[in-house]
Length: 340
Image 1: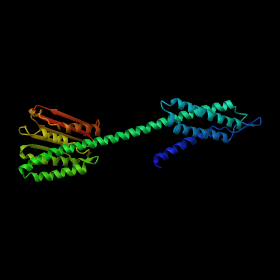
Image 2: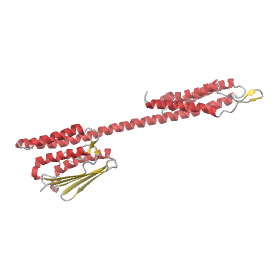
Image 3: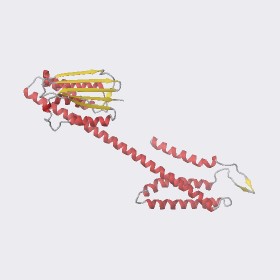
Image 4: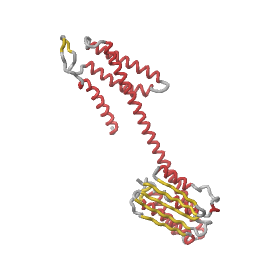
């Protein structure tokens, strides 16, 4: 039996003990008047049976009548069965009370007392069941929402790697055809990237140092490919800040800069500025681009940034700012994340 079930049982026992203790707490000392005992010092057996009937009615309604009949189509049947049950119990208890105390309690008075007490218990039982069902449904909904969130994040994260790998493999094919000496160091850098993507990025969060190291490997890989044809400024402020971050968040911005910041661009230059603060991290990536190349797009254009936006909205809602600035021949993206 788990802790939750144990707590529920203890709560029910305590509630009923308190309820059954009310007559004793309100009890007046017994006294004789004209030879009759007006008040009992203890709860008699008929009274105890009456209370046990109330307890039975509570659970009968909560665990049988409500689940089976409390629906739109069966609401009349529920009301009818509940009323019949209450009437039968009230009459039986009234007969028992009247037979035990014929002088002090009339049958009509005993029936009224039991009838309204049982209606009250039915109302409490109905409320208990409705609130409990709604709470369980909300828990199930949140659990499904969390599972859907995890599934969507896994899907979005998995889309990042193939997109990046597709570009890298194309580069390696081109180098292999040229029989370039750059192919071997590229393979070494690529193995480091694959190790990170396969073993590190599967965790929920990674240290900022590992994410930075991954970006360094990516930049080195691109530099091995392009050499002196491109200028890259990669500056990091406070890389050992002790922050943790969702993996593979920065790579779409850096990859996008290399994708659109070379080619038809004269004297291509990419500037990468990463700053780590107290529970904050910011990345700014700026690259030159050729306005004439904006119309030349493949089917994968925009996938990285759109996925990044979606992941940020899921992982850091209201705790991030993604700003894109575009001038005549310069494209800049700034990302600020609150890690608290």
